[in-house]
Length: 253
Image (tube, rainbow, N blue to C red; front, side, top):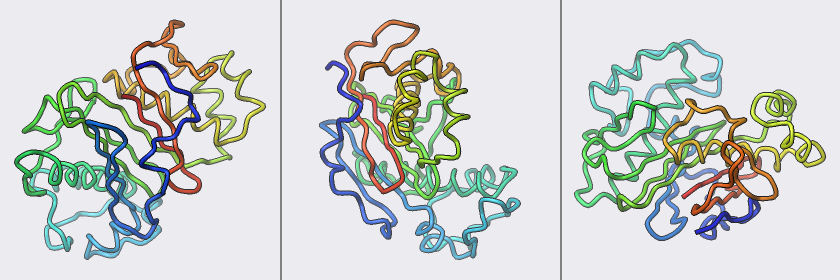
């Protein structure tokens, strides 16, 4: 496939999942599945321990199995969760892991129990299911949302990214994530357009398995075409959508 316009939406996401829903599955195309998780509902329905909206500025907590209504983390994962230095990081990791495990439990052939599903990481940071390393997995979170995407076959490769549109971050984002010619093109456009380009870059870097190991400025979105090191990237599909008001989601496959 060739690059698609940045404004093209993923058809199955035309009807946004209800914000009050904990979990929403979507089929963005043949061979791919997505799971969106509402972080506030996760904290309310899955956790017994009260966290509340102050988790973004709170110190870390020590979680135990009895703190969960739904046991989806194994002992080793609880130990990893308790190693984070901020409650915000704990909650975001928990939400991304929950989304990924729900995909595994619903779409992997052997449908493993959530607490037995393990997500490991490749040397450059790309996640994968330990029991199914050939299948592609991508995880993202921002604000009140987390999303995981998976390919159903080894040839179904994807990268996903979700970002909350934050106008106050505009100037910093332009300076740190975009090339001079991108800045020239983006300055007259609204914040949604800026964040669409940013999520597309992030999704592409996850697609190629590099994530934070590659500079965002080496990836450019110009005239609805994706460039890497100045060369147009062929044979991929790049789609963008707003699954909730105030959020932008991008997927590269």
